[in-house]
Image (cartoon, rainbow over all chains, first blue to last red):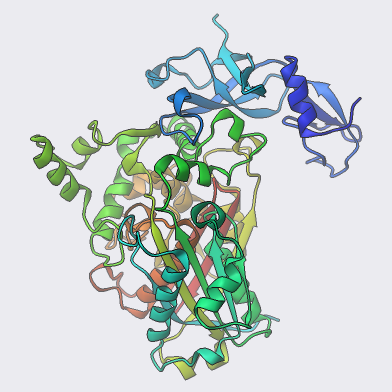
Length: 129
Length: 409
């Protein structure tokens, strides 16, 4: 296993892999990764694969974006709870940002990473059932 | 053992988006401090002041200026006294206040100035959005395009769903805050939302039948769905200051001191996704627990509060986290008028951040300014009757930090 670094998390995402870290001592799982176990406080962690599917917990549609994202607005940002635990903030694709009423909290989603200026961006899209 | 600390003076500039265009942060700070000096009933000699602590969130972005602690001290002629800048996003000024409180309560200093500054209008709205967004997690949140209105909008959606509340019901909060702010000479917007609706209506040749009719119109554009312009506090310039002294010295300065009876400050994850809930702030609950315990005060004892309504939804959540109302009841309380100036639990008589304005780093001590005036009975048309115990709640970012201060007459 490689050294734990945030940049490593994004390197793996670039390859289409979403990874969290698991505490070797108490088994607590954290996504996104951090350096000290939030449950028992040790730093003996290992990388583990995250599931790529989860549920949309809540969201917004950003109409006034920060500098540099003007061309992307309006866009949807949400919090996803992955099926094996852990939560991330991500871009939500596959819904019409101009019809926010149709975006349902609780929707099942799957990972579909985006790239902005060569850097990977976490994104999810709905699973059409 | 902590000593008693009193607030014997307070000052603030008017908060505004254009009025201070040609001034910079240090000049606004001087204005606030001079008003604080002149508010001391029996006068104060600046040479008695032993330290200056100044909150300022993002001077590097807004004014290409760091090292604001000594700069602020220098511009009020207080070098070489102790002083530095405190930064905790929108809670930067409550951090300055509590730093000053610790200096006095510990016996290290007898008299200190605490203050706050933010000079935001130099930048465009997009640039301000960008500058504020760095209070969120740069590694795990910003790449997705997170903004501050966006953070509170995601909380609003979670809140609406959980408690079966609608955006229309939430509008009771900005409507109430504008009614209060219309009575405040320091407020950025000295008008009710109906006043604004009439003005806009005349211009567009339309008639809005009430406040909600206007708020639902296209004029009130969406910033981050479901939050619209009037759910958001504005971009503002301003500064605030307060003078803290050792309790035993208070009567030397005034016959009506206001005492700091409890303080609290708490932290949480920057990232929303790292929290268990999006409909309440752990930092507010923890900071208020610290302050209530120290002050030996219960939520029901608070006569008036200034809370951090950076966005409409934040006021609803704050009034619940502070223990004034049950979870999910904050919006209903505003709808029923309980939080109006004449209600049982007046919240944001100043007009709140929404109407008074929100120069980020100045806000916490502007809240103290309002409560100090309220407890001394100097709030004119927006005076809460018989206010003896007041509270301020000053949230940082999307709730990763929070300062709570309880003041008593």
